[in-house]
Image (cartoon, rainbow, N blue to C red):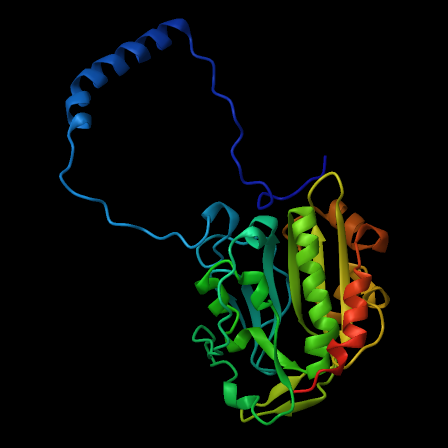
Length: 312
């Protein structure tokens, strides 16, 4: 049995303690007496109509990062850890970027009715030092590339809007953003649907000097981006990582695949440190078996023949 820390399975154990016959009799009598006195009140009917409520998503399927303790966040030096309702991030003021964005992606989320894309970028008011601004990207020649994709949070309007906060974007070459990065994002959704739930951490590679700085706030243009995906649904436990240069690529995604340990080495980030015990983490993160992850040849061909040729 795999050993996960308390965040992975927080459900209480079933079963009730045995009750001695005498205690059981007392409990039954007590329940009868209470019922006799409480029943009239229970039968009263209020002459009011309850207000209608709208639940944008099933709470059991979407963890609220802003209110619940989140156990799958990475460990690294950042200026501020920010918990939005539908994902968390670690912000680095020096680069005006998130070093990482972490979230769960589930089959149930992907099965929900999709809302309309927001397409309205906003500064992140939770960033204490102020986030990058929309004007920082204007005229730069770079896309405002999402870290957590909008399509991963299309199950509610609020969730979708959170992905358009400026703390969740980074400067990306257009044909990277709409090419190989798009292909990887779509694959991650396919994997989440197939394996029911995956943990995702993604962000820019900040351990190497940026290509340049853009805008009044000097936003760093990363040389590459990483993404790590973890599936801990038994019986098959597996993880995979990618580091992809911020440029047009005609290579297959498999050529950028690596172990989570290798991504940790290049980024300086410790992923999933509080999610698994050390023995299990070592087993999953030290190796990668590409055969356990389905790569879509049709998506690759679509990227080569169409996506890589799109112009801004």
